[in-house]
Length: 98
Image (cartoon, rainbow, N blue to C red):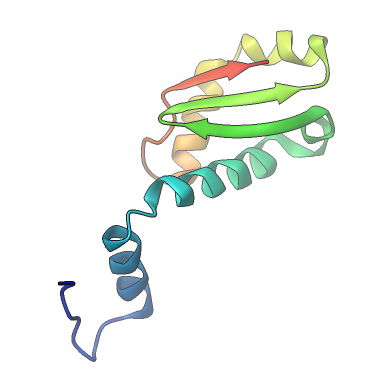
C-alpha cells in the first residue's frame, strides 16, 4: 500500500511520490534528456537531429549530417557534462552518434 502524504505536502512532493511509486523515472529521464538536447544544442544542430533516445544511461542521437556527427564526436564528454549539469544529476554516461 502506498504511503499516505499529509495534507500539507507540496505538489512537487506528491508528484515525486507518484513517479517513485509507479516507477516512471526512466520515462521522465527520456523526456528530460530530449528537452535538454534541444535546448543546449541550439537550432543549427537540431535541424540535423532526427532522433534522440535514452536507453539506460546511454544517449543515442541520430543525425542527418555526417560532418556534424564527426564534429560532435570530438566533444562527447562535453555533451555528457552539459546534459547532466542541465538535469542536475548523472543521467547520461555515454553518447553514441549515428
